[in-house]
Length: 47
Image: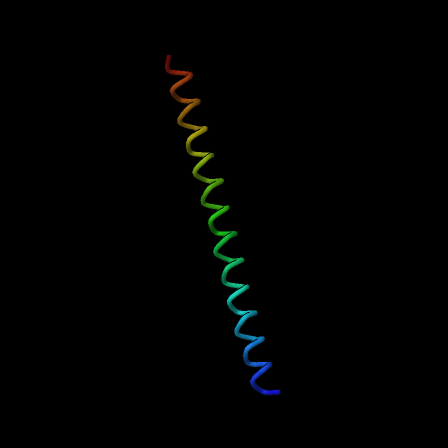
C-alpha cells in the first residue's frame, strides 16, 4: 500500500512539472509572437 501511494505521488509530481513546463513554453511562445508582431509593426511604419 505504501509503495502504491509513493509511486502515485511521484507520477503526480512528474505530471505537474510537465504541465508547468508546457505552460511556461506557451507563455514564452506568446511573448515571442508579441515581440515579432511589434517588430513587424515598426518595420511597417518605417517604410
